[in-house]
Length: 276
Image (cartoon, rainbow, N blue to C red):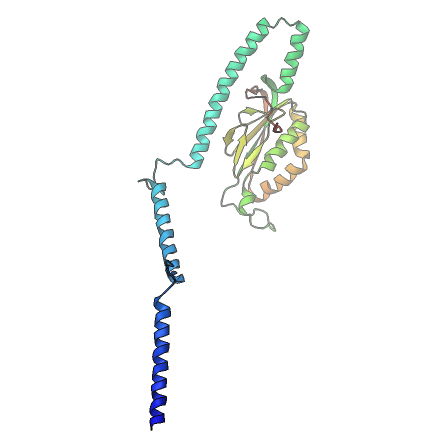
């Protein structure tokens, strides 16, 4: 009986010592050492911090305005059109000043008649002088947005099949040059050797100005040769397939007398330079 009591007392003492040791380990740490946060608490704090950052950013962006419907915020398209009109006004003013400069230079240059004639020929070839003569104009227009295939066997059109692309305008310009055009204008601007016909989406960007369809290309030259060049162009022949199938716009007109404006923009070349 005493042996059993002694065993019971030893087991009781051992359990008491173990519970005391565990309690001591959980409640004490080295001096000055802070207990770490649990991962769940860290994640919660991060979520609240991120939410606060989002709210602050939204408030700082809006600043009291409705960022969806506020009329005072210009659309990008409106800004582009505004800049395009401004460029047009500046170009017209630049053209007027250039005419004044040319007049003063011609009066005080002291050059001979031969030199003056050579300069006039160079200006004519450069496209900076007005050009008058017989002409052919080509008008390209988008197809109706709800257009369907008009020829049996053709697939129904995709959105890209119904609009004028940069390659279409370039094909017309290149064909007219090949047909002996003495000068070309696209819309209301004269083309020169450094002009580039570029389209972004459904808009034409030409020498700092923006245009929407219909697009009109006018060339001064012999109308018959210009027409033949248009007909012979493989790129235009491909375009005509879409004209017949989906209704893309194509119109060619002849003019007995047409005056192309002289190019009035800058003729300076801009190119990259190595850093010294």
